[in-house]
Length: 235
Image 1 (cartoon, rainbow, N blue to C red):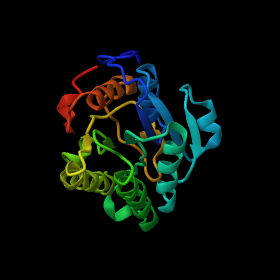
Image 2: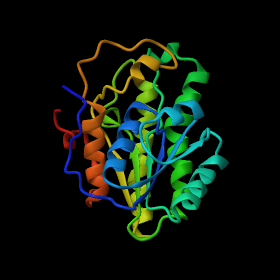
Image 3: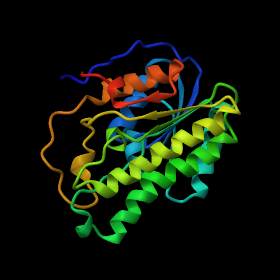
Image 4: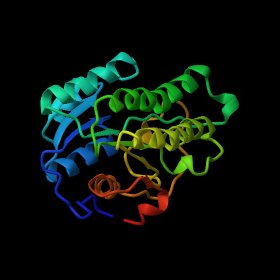
């Protein structure tokens, strides 16, 4: 597999998009894809240096969204930059490996703070800013469909996001805001090599970030409300 552009390349000219986790393997691929389609981007990550190195145009804002108030700051920055906000993409995530009886409490807290609480807090802040036709994208991943031994706490943190999205989509529908829960199969983002605890098991070759990003961006441009693992196919 080569990491080449995929998807329909439907234009999204002028669409104001906030990408949280913009410097990650998947977040950066989504940023490049959306930029190619003409979107106006606000790019959020913890490291200013990594944001500056990102090969995508946009407003760069270094924020640690584990601080709840900063989720609202991210929303405000996007509106100040683009004049409005149309889409919020949350591509933030951490992973840990190992039997549940070996994981530290600190690790479990970090998994749920980053993987679960940030999507909730960012979704809460976004609902007050998105207008008719707005979109919220959360990436829970294939593990939210079926958890596996050795990743129990990580899988639980992602399954919680999927459950949250299911209810959020019904609440947001009243505001004409669409919620997309994306559950791509294993993707070669490098996240497994940066586990906050434990070592990754041997995994088959995953999908390319650009292929996964294209599917997600096509969903933003279209009318999808759910992206199960089967929506991503093989690339």
